[in-house]
Image 1 (tube, rainbow, N blue to C red):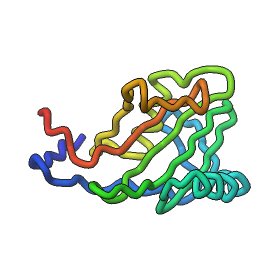
Image 2 (image 1 turned 180 degrees about the vertical axis):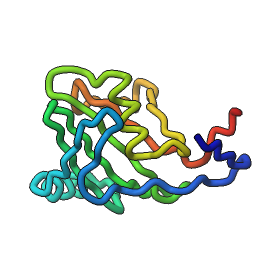
Image 3 (image 1 turned 120 degrees about the horizontal axis):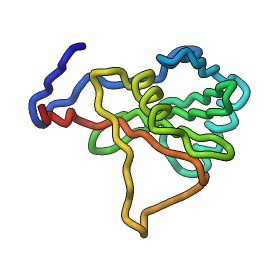
Image 4 (image 1 turned 90 degrees about the vertical axis):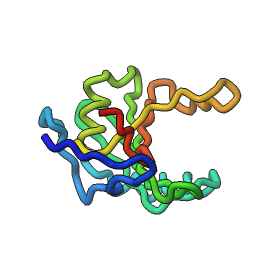
Length: 139
């Protein structure tokens, strides 16, 4: 396993949207949903969000992953993955598998718990991973 060290303030290599289906380390395949992706892109655009790319993936287990490359003023494009099931929360293991598949081993991702006034709960069983704009550098 490589230990990519990034000096404070430096940006690690950017994560990007995968091309096609994504296979998680446990063998579960996230299938790129060619029908849902354009509909979600339109809904995202109507909400006023700015995205440099979007893809929707579904698995036979019912897991849904929506990945977007979100434009930020301060940090540039950052990968954002929403992970959900219709009737249950994704497990920590499932969240980690998605993190590893979409961000790789050498990029940091975070789950943000915003202050109460900024909290938005569109889907009861959805968790969000956000690409870190720079490496943690804690080792």
